[in-house]
Length: 366
Ligand code: NDP
Image 1 (cartoon, protein in one colour):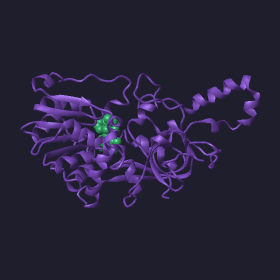
Image 2: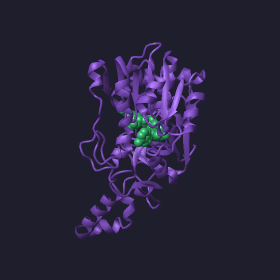
Image 3: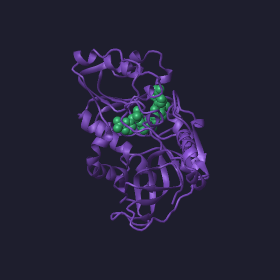
Image 4: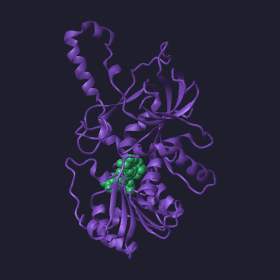
């Protein structure tokens, strides 16, 4: 059972070499009698920015840290002195390491759970490995619609889709004709927010880090305008160029300098959906934010959120999004990395903008 394991806690920017491929783990694909776990074959794994937080040693974060292999090894070395028998049975130490955990799409191979049976397709929390035993199968969603690419359940039909929906409709309450700005606009969440804004009759501008992404925003996702933030010297002037009358809604994915430039350009009673601040995730110390005072003078409402608090709305979201996909009124771009071995580079690539669209790792197609 090939796995991707975190070697040690990460400081600063994550690197491919922070993870390793463990080829020597084994797994029993048949559940013991009476178990209520589920055994799955992993098909598609999702690379998500929040996973960076799990690579750090927990410091009051909202997500639990991974257990790096180095910690697993240290535990085993402590056991060595006291538990010889244990060590004889577990002489192949890497077997005891946990793979990186994340969201993914999987096929059920064996189930002790009443709602899931062999061959069902599911999405939810799984491991970065070929096969996983899910001990809390209530966290898995059964996939009902299989007439769409299954990988979509890591993106438009999964957590990022729900994020775009909750963050835009629930938090921003868009109105026709409003001016909307989206950062990291070509990514898993951003591409959907831009399209939702167009469907709501808004004027929408997106920022992204390459010309290819800017072209995608304008030509595929239907943004009215888009710019490469890496080529702009003065972001305040850039925003004034695209929004001479100001911004009603800012969908915040990046934080830092972009947020500082947006704040003075907000319109009266504007809304900021604070979804993510990826420019801050690899900093040793979070930077402060200048220009916050404009929130007061413009009566701006800035609200953060965690998507899991909106998961009860998932059925409502599915009712909205499925027809839009079927009628081709919305499209979704994915960046598929082939094979588990490509997973470390794919995850790390989120922080340099290597991904074009939703970053997915294909472990198996069926
Ligand atoms: P993306 O698919 O957008 O991938 C991340 C992108 O961020 C990169 O492709 C890159 O694009 C951009 N980026 C990376 N580093 C920087 C930087 N220093 N400055 C500016 N842009 C940068 O990821 P997602 O769509 O999955 O996530 C988008 C945001 O939403 C993240 O901040 C994430 O944490 C957040 N999020 C929040 C959730 C919640 O519950 N609140 C749930 C899911 C996501 P580019 O080429 O444009 O630089």
